[in-house]
Image (cartoon, rainbow, N blue to C red; front, side, top):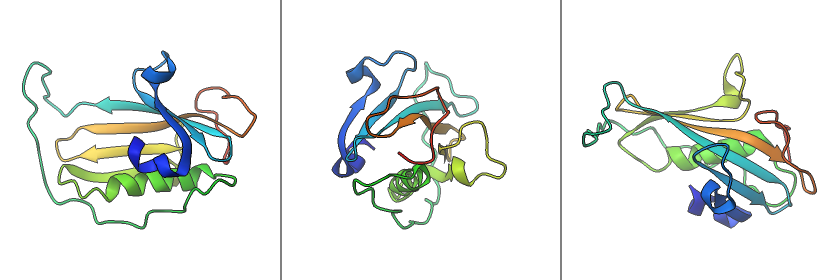
Length: 151
């Protein structure tokens, strides 16, 4: 994902690169407009997965491609547009291991995490891409999961 969004951001670093230790895996993204988005990654194993065994790859029909979503061009960035863009990047890989992607902002009712993705795999595993924090230019990250609608 890092390389796919890099043309639309100033900087994209892993949690390891920035020394972020509150979560194991994620990206800190500096937008062209000076704002930022902190993406946290989490996963749920497939039923019956055993970490001491070789992963059994499950494949099926990939999801249909979707429009890439609004370009993030350096102006004010709406979090639902950013979420749509990331969802399209995942869906448009054509991966036969991928079942679907659910955007958090389109859930009804919306959950505790307002923006992000739940990625479902044919194996039964799920990957979560949560917008942990987001902030406008000159701002600072606020409380986890309490993010503005645009930055």
